[in-house]
Length: 251
Length: 354
Figure 1 (tube, rainbow over the protein chains, first blue to last red):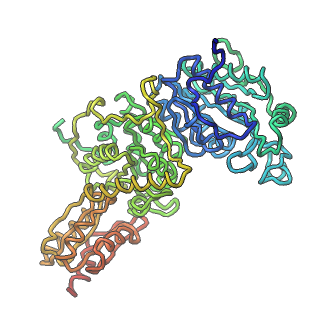
Figure 2: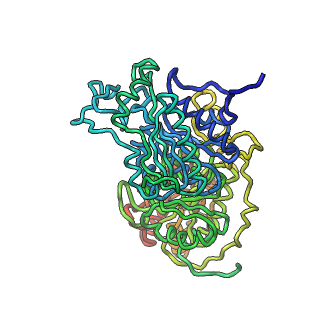
């Protein structure tokens, strides 16, 4: 019998550490599929962050480095400058990228560093047990905002894609979601485009992926996917925020 | 080359680094190491390398982590407050067993401190600085020539032991001009192979992982124990020092870096006045040259640690002398440099009762 569906080669045959219903696994698979389809496994170097995906170096078959909290874009810069022909990407959550690592994120883009950031936005710190993230929504209840995020105390969520699109060195910035099959397909296309952008030497690329955290949101996996659509998408609209490639036009 | 050139210490260090195969420099501006980065910016690209001014010291040291993990001979340089910012990254570099060179052109502290020469980062350099059980190889040159020579040695030893190395200097050494002779440029092909580096598998080997996270305590302890075995070997074999007129000395001055040169002139003056004084100059601060102190505790009557701090290296001298002889201290700090006359006065204070 012909096998028509298999694990991507660059996704390791191990048990992932993520909670049931968490979308990290979906995004890992998409990255591995794109790497396989582009024939890049042998020249890919990934960087894992601090957060739930801290052990992502165990989940891919290509070379990986583990970075300090928020420093993945700096680590990626070091790697890319040594190996400019390799595919170098970071995998980072919202606390890692938009709080402690904001400077590294902005300046790697400003340098037009030829790297790709895969940014998981689930509006919460998952690993440490559900604290407020820089992307937490107004009124969102978390461990450190037990009465909800209040504008007068904690201010507003950070809009990463909108912010990054203002930076000249950024070539491609898109916000996607993994809440549904059509959106998962669009996410895969965005990852592929970002990697192509990097390999063509066009500069910095970032794919922001709206994701779930059923455990810390206190929801079932299905409710969590629904929250992406009803609560997150109005605050974080999907779309291409910057595309300086030839076929682009969003500048 | 075979020719001596007149150069500032900061620039000589940069030139020596490129000659021994360093092609990646990541830094952030700070006084008084400025000329080092400026020289790198001018020359590195011509040598086919990368000079990158990062957005912070924190970013710079993490770029070093990435580049070292990718197999490159790489360095950063800074001064005291900037080195404090790098400590997180240095701990990760040590935890991931990565080689690199970190230069600290020390200035007065704590806090923003001052910009004049100091040695008050001794504890930070030799006792950790960042979190966890780890050490750096710490070299303390006292002349521009030695600065150039130790730069090359520091890179080699860092590669050999897979650990970060530090050159500790001060503004005096960084700014002073002296004749220096450089080694020839090494062929990058002759640098040690790094089969552990993340270079892309090329589908020819299993993946490499650069990492310092071990969630199983048994595994983390085992790794720390193995690393300690390496440190023990280094303490046994890699300590460097210079000993001057110590054989018959009643009092032995202990000083390192540029201050050792001032201390040496005080020793010469004391000798000319008939006082039996010698000098031990540690060249590696970690590993500390403990054995020479054990030996000289048998032949001399006392030690005097002279430092540009409130008394930091003196603790290692005391540990090494192990109570066999008195160990005295004299220091200036905050950017003040002990004068030869002041050191001589200290010598006389202690030697007259011997």
